[in-house]
Image (cartoon, rainbow, N blue to C red):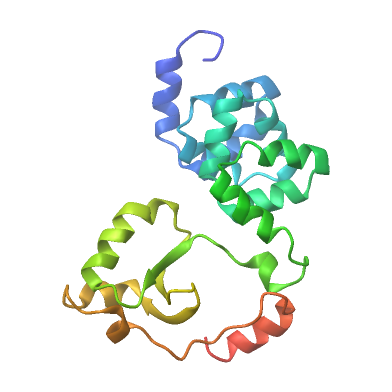
Length: 212
C-alpha cells in the first residue's frame, strides 16, 4: 500500500487498529515503512503505539521522523515514557530529543530524571489532576474538561494549597456525585498516605500495600 499510493486505503486500515495492534505491526516493517506509517498517524495514536515498543525501536523511529512530527509525538507521550526513552540513549542523543519536547513538559521530565533509579521519584507521574481546596465540584469538573487529555491519573483529584503542597485526595466519582457548589474541602480525604520521593521503591510498595 505504501508503494501503490493507496494512502486512503492504508489510513482506513489503520483507523480500524488499536495503538497496541499498530505497535505489534511496526517491527515487521522495514525502517522506512515504519517511519512512513507513524507519520500518517495522529500524534496521540502514534504516541500510544510508540509506548508499546521497546526504547531502541522508539528512538530509531523518532530520530528519523520529520522534526515537527517528532515534536508532536513526544508532546503526546507520557512523561514516564519520555524519561525511559531519554535514559536509555546516549546523553547527547537525549539532549537533542528533549529539545523537541515542549518547555513546560521538558522541565517536569528533567526533574524526574534526577531521581535515583530505584527511588519512588523515578516511578512517579507528574501528570495528574491538581486543584485548590477552595474550588467547587463544578469548577473541578470544568478544569478536568480542559486538561483531562493530558492527565495520566484520571480517577483521582489531588487537592493542593497555595504553595502546591498536597492537603487531600478525592475520587473523581465523589466529585461528580457531589452538588455542583460543594467545595473540595468538604469532599476530599485528608488522611493521605505518602512517601518521600527518594524513598526506596520496595519500602514504599510495602507501606502502600498495607493501605490498598
